Image (cartoon, rainbow, N blue to C red; front, side, top):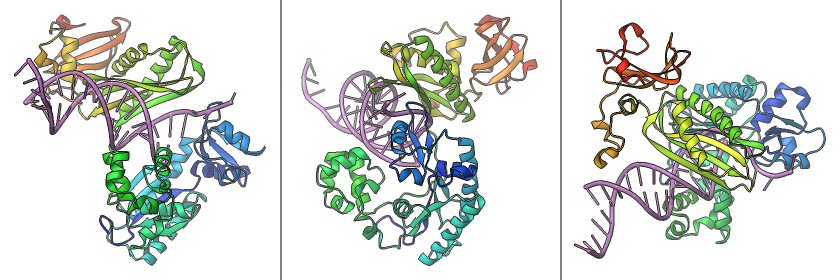
Length: 455
DNA sequence: TCTGGGGTCCTAGGACCC
DNA sequence: TCTGGGGTCCTAGGACCC
């Protein structure tokens, strides 16, 4: 079969009802009872329902109010304790790394493992079954009794489907060559990328199962679902999946959002919520040591209509002040008179090093024409950009008599520092210069202030 | 008291460039 | 002057996943 391994060497592991299981483990009185973990406010949704709660119809992503109606008195409704979940997750991921260096963690409770990578495992069906059965036992004893389900197959797709087949505490090894037999009778919903909307569209063509989907031609699928999704469906229906287990995945965006208990029309309140979210996003951006060019806000109205507004900066920034200013400008364009149900902010378009030079120019050299030549209005190619030391803008570099200072812009042996202190007032920019372009601005003795260009 | 929060990927149209 | 493509960037929205 095209693009599929000859042996069942990809493991997909999934922890059963993970959040609820951790709660039941840590609080014996919850064992055997229905447990719902998720948002417990008026507008909350269920993150995880224990199997006891599922018996009453509670499900992930269901509004908590609906779960309250379905579940009997005595059901526990709990806020998530992410720290506890992360701790158990680490224990499990460590056990996976004992099997292979190639582990792709998909989420806190789910991972793929390439069992072929070490070259030492017995990859016969009986061999992997014994290996993974032992793994599941070790997970239970290392985590105080958490159960996991696993699928092992010749592809990620079949491994994931396999891990779902006998949940909870199930282990399915899909024998190579039997992939199609496994998937053909199943609903198209088991295929990755087939959600409610796609399933509904397919149903209108009489397609319910994977076998039905196989009967649709590639041109038809492409004309209905577009180039990418159409080809994807055609492949997945035939169990063609050659995706590798990827160890490291690059972060593409960082965001925070909040649904309010009641819709908020008050601009002052929205502004303070926005600032708080920018602080969270900016903090994580700082930890990632990268810089973002695009700022996006998200709003949701009382009727659940949702809109995003984004702006791409000419230069990547790591500064919360810049992100906040941009987000405020975008929010100012939104009509909030009916109140917002949700407000969010995110950053994307990351670059790994600062494009500080041009930001520096804006702050440090106000005599630069405000409207440059048309030819200069486009972003210069990266090669033509003046080299700049990769000092982190927003980086905390100075605490002196001026107050606390953060790098605002830097380049060509100079660094501008934005201060906020008793002597400077908020937002004042001072520029320091050095003959040594590599010198770090946190070494004050070698920097001389240049009052001529101070802002 | 229907509908969280954090992500990824894709599409489509318009601007702009060659 | 009219008529074109292709490619890339930006923006907005939608589907999907856990």
